[in-house]
Every structure is written in structure tokens, then in C-alpha cells.
Image 1 (cartoon, rainbow, N blue to C red):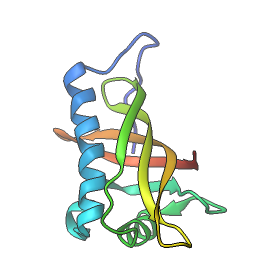
Image 2: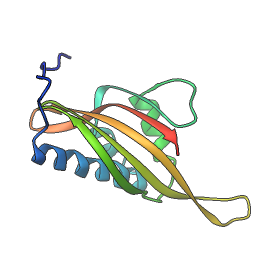
Image 3: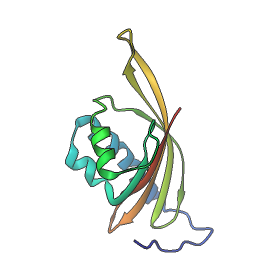
Image 4: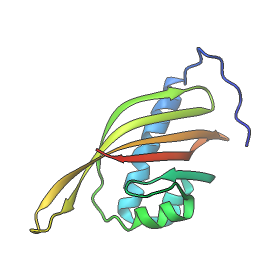
Length: 134
């Protein structure tokens, strides 16, 4: 896949930025709902991402199977920033959800994410990502 070259001063349109942030919310809500079809539809076929706690990047199929097993706690997203141009938007954010601790109590878990979204027709798909424990 070839991405169009962007000038150094190019910025994504505000409507595209809003669309991508909305898709980030959908990414997490479909995962929490266990909706495999809707979740996978957000990913480009050539997606590769580096999940938290893994020693190497993983493919679309590994990511979707792993994420759909996380459970129904949709994290709160703290949008930090984004960059990009007309056909590529990279978002950076912090996600806070809860995990059950050894004593049975719910404990907050904070992770940092970056996702790279590319324009596909009139919509967007995530083509790359990375997670870091916060």
C-alpha cells in the first residue's frame, strides 16, 4: 500500500481527527462487547501492532483474539495528541480500566497507546499500534 506524500506543514482536517477519535472509542466498545466482526472491521488487513507485555509485534489475528478476551471493562480514554495529514492520522492516548487484584478488589490499570489510522475510501482503519504499561 502506498501512502500519499504529505507536505511538512500538512495537518489533518478537524473532521477527520474527530472521526478517528470516535473510531478509537468504537475500538474499545466493540472489544468490551466481544463483537468480533465489528472489532476486526476497524483493522486494515496489513495491521501490525505491539501489545503491552509482548516481546514482539503481532498481526491483526493475534491482536483481535487477545483483545476480545480482556473482558467487558471499557477503558476511559484520555486523548493526548494526534499528528498526521490527509490520509494518515496517528493518535496518542492513555487508557484507564480496572483489573481484579489478588484480593478480589478492582484496581485501576493505566496503559499508553498509539494507533496509526489510514484513510480507506471514505473511512479509516488502524494499520499500526503500540501499547506501553503506564
